[in-house]
Image (cartoon, rainbow, N blue to C red; front, side, top):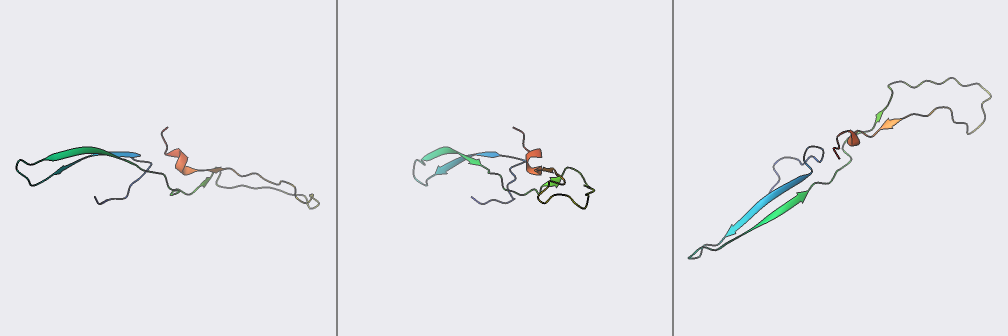
Length: 83
């Protein structure tokens, strides 16, 4: 079995195949089985900032180790998940 196109977890998470094998005997014998392929997610979507621009104004005597701004990132891979 060869994969002809890339698998995409966000599009299809599972593929189910029916495989049948036959011999060349007389009479010909055969057997069939089902194969389930579970596609795992890869980190193929970069995170996005929740805002395009963040701005902050600081006083010059701010204490060391002060929190000056919090930014929010969105994991875009989660946007495509349906369950």
